Amino acid sequence: MGNMMMRNSCLAFLIILMVILVTISGCITPQAGNMNYSSGSVATNITTPGEDPAGGPPVTLFADSQKMKTIGIIGGVGWSSSLQYYRIMNEKAQNDLGGDNSAKILMYSIEFGEFSKQERLAEAGNWDPLNATLVDAGQRLKRGGADFIVIASNTLNSRAELVEKSTGLPVLRIYDVTGDKVNRSGLKKVALLGTKYTMEANFYRDALKNKYGIEVVTPNLTERDYINTVIFDELVRNDIRNESRVEYVRIINRLVDEEGAQGVILGCTEIPLLINQSDVKVPVFDTARIHAEAAVDYALDRT
Image 1: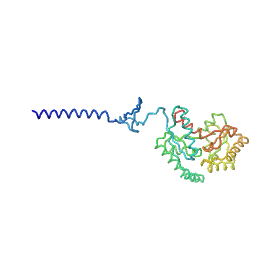
Image 2: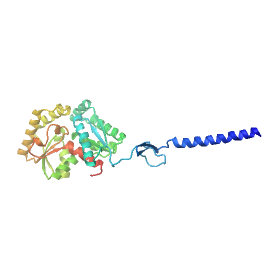
Image 3: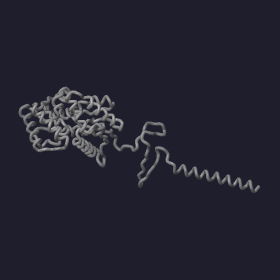
Image 4: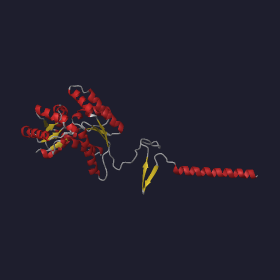
């Protein structure tokens, strides 16, 4: 009898101990998607990105206070203008949304030393290496979670359709947002400064004329060569020279006085490092700023 009572007591004790352990385990074991951390009176629910234990759609680490798409930037062409894109986008997001808000940005910065060789090959007619680099950059941004792509270069927006098709992501074209800006200003004839390719190829002028009814005038051949040289030998290296500014202003003023330009498009994202509105007598359209600000509007579904 005594032994039986002892065995029953031990069994009861073990059952009670198991209940206590299960209860404690339930209190301290985190359940996926519902771990709760507190700081003062504020608690934040954390979930594993891309996983939902309930079998629903993928979830994100934190809920956004403001719905915003992630901007993917193909940058580094050159880095000095990409720096301005990043600054302008974040300043606009903070100004528009207030508080500590900023833009959601992914940037892939192309190594320009090698890329400049690819640009020279493209100028000679072989676009394959350059195209491959841009497609690779776009796909990297897609894998990183970008919702759309901005190519931070006027010249390389000629490859927008290629990047769009290869990634399946929308590409916000710089010539479209610039054309819209010029059109809203009421001007009908503008000068276009940029790389030789941008000034001489049809992709830019055709978009402005066919979509927005804007006539484009460009510098003469000697002036185009000079503008192109300054861009690649100075501006992409963040080498800003006053003598280059003076000559750019002279060219713009000639296009205004002799060609009837009512404004000027700074159609290379590095040119705004050299020229601003205070330098010339007609409206200046800074394509880097126009493009960057339009990207934030697009990210906020304002377009």
